[in-house]
Length: 223
Ligand code: DC
Image (cartoon, rainbow, N blue to C red; front, side, top):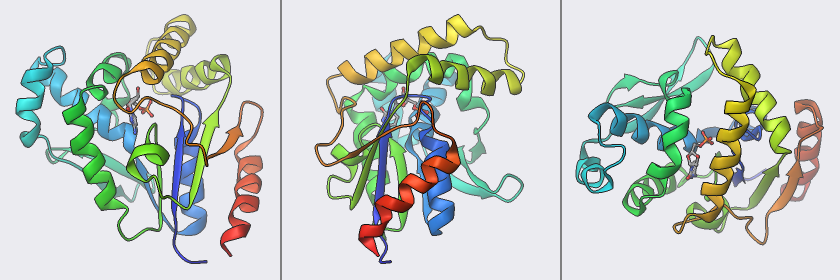
């Protein structure tokens, strides 16, 4: 099979990363979680106390360096902010609560989209996000738009955070998910929407194995 670009877009906590990571492992492709990049910029802004000051953040953007480095212990890539591994910190709920605002700043998007396009130049990549099939790679060979019931998504994120020892309630998580859906869909720059040529995958009631069977069917046309 010749190397292609696989774009995976959809709502937050919809299982995009789990799915995209498994597809990348199956094909020997690079996996890029673009949400981690927006989260890293958000963390940078929070640490500098400028998360609510778009102009100050835009001015500081040249000082924000993001890269991914393979972690042999977990077998996945971690995101680094100015040389520091911030993989755990960017998943915190206070970062989740601010990331939609930061990711609606056009200059932030321009910087990260350019980086993402560079990462995909050699193809052989599975990238997950909100605008991958519409903005980052409008010519991607395979575009997938994932959906799942908001309540199912909240349950998944709740279990993840509790397992990590965070003190959160289901209500707080569900509220955060619904609010992020709304912000992602209604923002002016690159709102979350399905590319016309994207195939839909509703995984509310699917196991990862079932999703892998589904993708195998989708990949047949590239053989
Ligand atoms: O996938 P995630 O929940 O980790 O993404 C975090 C936030 O980043 C999400 O609220 C929307 C934003 N995002 C975006 O605007 N564009 C992307 N390509 C990926 C994420």
